[in-house]
Image 1 (tube, rainbow, N blue to C red):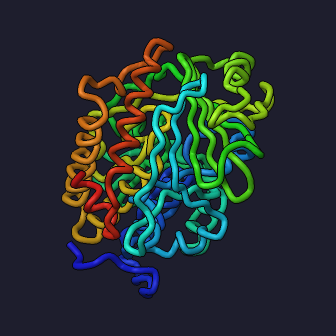
Image 2: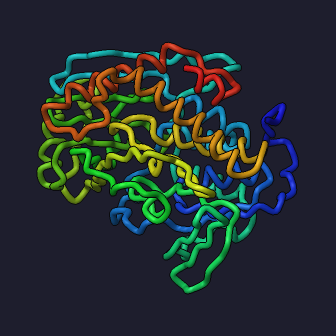
Length: 390
């Protein structure tokens, strides 16, 4: 194990010759490639499944990074570049749809040695992560078609008919992962029972405060950004008209979260079905899964931040030793992290099962448990190591 993590001031190490294919060109795939590149490997990023809803990029303007992810991305100089277009989150306000405040949590951030919750412009974050990679290493027009591994060096045939061999293939391609489907004996992901809808909510919300309002069959979250407010609606319907009606029911004068909400109609909502993914293995030969390709969590959790932790640990282990020992160590560390999170959130495993309207109170309890446990601790600047001990 290296004695220290490379900092942004270090000269990028020369590649050690190991070629890694990262499938998935979203924030998780770009994070994986940036950490791998920093550790001296040679990543190539290609597109994942072509199932992103039309218009989603236009409304999904922001993402909240939890302190562990902020700390890790700061190590490679990313946070310094995205900070001017980011908002530090100082308060998390959770309420009922009727306006009762269920909890108001203040972050422990405030000193020079800890890291904040940060609402980041997702497109800017993507551009900065791309800048950490060598020229032409992101090939978004190239999609994989067939995978051959048989426990040896994986060979990938692309849609253009070209085949290439890699030292490692990383599935950073979400809950409908092509890598998982092609290289792991696991069932297809199931429908969790909810759909998450993204929308613009300019003018709503409070500066520095993430607001959540919970009803019996839906919840809405408002996240402040430097250019407006991002909205998320989680419902048990996958119909846009019904989702717009559910969102409209949250608009109330004097409500601590939604008093200034001007809810959009069906055309202003972009939905993505929430999947249940828990494969038996995250590693197979020279294949590895990270982020939602490896496991799903209940909606409105910390999925991206956990995925950033995944990619950092994977790169760290690969820098210390070669496959497959590095991958086995990666899986051991990250499964332990998930098991501790599971135990902390839900003793009866509520978060693993499909969710109906009757299950929304359970989802709220999971959410509050996660927030309270996270706000009760000051994150260490060493990032993922202290996070994994929690």
